[in-house]
Amino acid sequence: METMEVMEVMEVSDQVRLMCQLYFVCCVLNF
Image: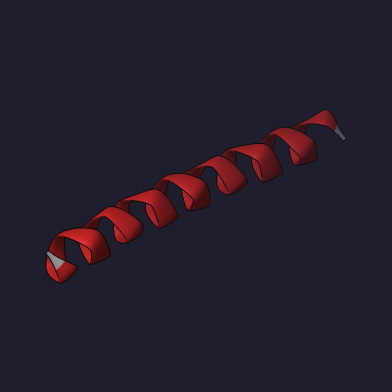
């Protein structure tokens, strides 16, 4: 169970990281 939870957290963190990168790129392109 713990391993499953850790995996889920890792996936969520990866998604958030990608979203942040896309948002940052969009902001830079807007400038």
